[in-house]
Image (cartoon, rainbow, N blue to C red; front, top):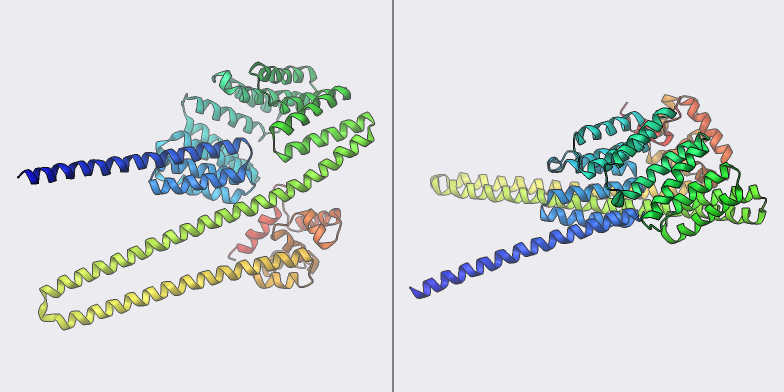
Length: 502
C-alpha cells in the first residue's frame, strides 16, 4: 500500500515538473518573439528595411509555431510594412490582404486599423488615389471613438496623408490643423517628434505659398521644440530653415543651415534619399553664391548618391524577393506535409475500417481482401500522381526562372535575339498587343517588352545605346497610342493586357 502511495506521489510531482517546464518554455518562446518584434520595429525607425523584414520573418515563424495569433498578426504587419518601404507594393499588399481575412484581428482593433492604414499607403503608391482615400476613411471608422494614445497618433498620421491627396490649398491647411488638434491630445514629451513633423508640414506649406513670416514661425517652433527636449537629431529642422532663407535669397544663411543639416545627417541618418535632397540644395545654393568649385563638388556627390540609391534599391529588392520566395517554399512544404498527413490518416482509417469489417464478416473474407487490394492500388496511384505533379511543378518553375533570367540577360546586352526569345517566353504578348493596337513596329514592340520586364527609361537608354530623351519620347508616343492616362503605369498596364483571358 505504501509503495502504491509513493508511486502516486512521485507521478504527481513528475507531472507538475513537466507541466511547469513546458509553461516556462512557452514563456521563453513568447519573450523571444516579443524581443524580435521590438528589434524589427527599431530597424524600421532606423530605415533598415531588409533587417526589419528578416527579423519580422523570424518572429512570424515562431509565432506560428506557438499558435499566438496576436503576435503572428504583428509580425505580418512588420513584414508588409518593410516590403512597402522597399518599394515592393504588390508583395506588401498580398500580405495585407492575406492578414485581413484572419480571424484573430478582431481581438486587437488597433492592429486592424494599422493594416487598413498601410493598405491606404499602398493604394496611394500604386496611384489608386480614390481607393487610398477610401481606406483612410475606413481607418477612421474602425477607430470610432477610441481615445487611446495609439488612436490619436494614427488619426494625426491619416490627416497628414489626406493633405497629400488634395491640391486644394485651403483643404491642405485644414488637414494639417486637424493633425495638430489630434497631437495636442498626446503628451508632448513622448510625442514631440510628431509635433515637430506637424510644424514642419505647416511651415513648408506656408513656404510653398510664399508666406515667409508664417513659415518661419512654424519652422522655428519645430526647432525650438527639439532644443527643449535636447534631441540631437536636427537635420529636418536645419533643412527647412535652409529652404526658408534660400527663398528669402539670403544664401549665406541658407548655406549655413544646409551644411549643418549635412553634418547632422552624417551622424544620425543613413537614408540616401535624404542626402540626395541636401546635395541638391547645396549645389543650387553654391551656384547662387557663384562658388563653382563647391557647386561641382556637391553636384558630383549627388550623382554618386543616385547611383548608390539605384544599386541599393536593386540589391534590397532582390534580397527581399528571395526572402519571400523562401517563405513561400516553406509554406508549400508545410502544405505538402499536411496533405500527406491527411492521406496517411485516411489510409489508416480505411485499414481500421477494413479490419473491423473483416472480423465481423469473416465469411466474406475473400471479397474483403480483394476490396483492400483495390483500395491500396488506388491510393498508390494517387500518391504516384501527386509525386509526378510535384516533380512537374518543380521542373516548370525551374524552366520559367531560367527563361526569365535569360530574357533579362539578353535585354541588358541588347542582343538581336532578345525580342525573339521574349516572344517564346511570353507568347501572348505580341498577339494581344497587336490586337489592341494594330500596326505597331518591331522597335515599338521591343520597347514595350523592355517596359513589361520592369526596366525604367534610364535602364532602357543604357542597354539600347540611346539617349534618355529618345526613349522617353518613344514611350510617350506609345502611351498616346494606348490612350494611357498620366496616372497609369505602362508596365502594369502591359502585364494586365497580357494576362487578360480574352
